[in-house]
Length: 143
Image (cartoon, rainbow, N blue to C red; front, side):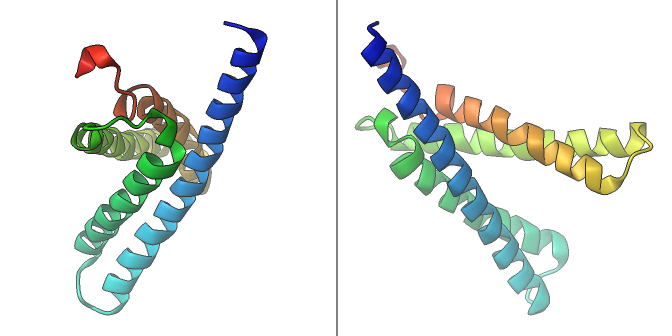
C-alpha cells in the first residue's frame, strides 16, 4: 500500500469515527427525548418508555451509520444483514454498559456518576469497532 493510499485510508477511518460520534450523540438525545416524553406524558411506565426510546434511537443510529458514518462500506443487497448485525452490536453494547456499571457499583467505593461515565466511555469505542469491522463491513466471501 502506498503512502498516499495509507493516508487516504486513515483519513476515511478518522472521518468515520467522527461521524459515528455525531450519530451516537443524536441517537442518545433521541432516546432521551422519546423516553422522557412518554414517561412525562403518562403514556408509559419507565421501563416501557425507556424501551421505546431505545427502539426509536436504534433506527436513528442505524440510519446515520448506514447512510453516513459507514457509507463507504455499503454494498448493494446488504441492508438487512447490516440491520441484523447492528442490532446485535447495539444490544450487546447496551448489555455491556449495564454490566460494567453494575460491577462498578458493586465492586468499587467510587461514585455512581464516575461509574456511569466510565461505562459510557468504554462501550462506544468497542461499539465503533464492532460496527466498523462487522456490522457494516461486507466482504464478498461473506455474501
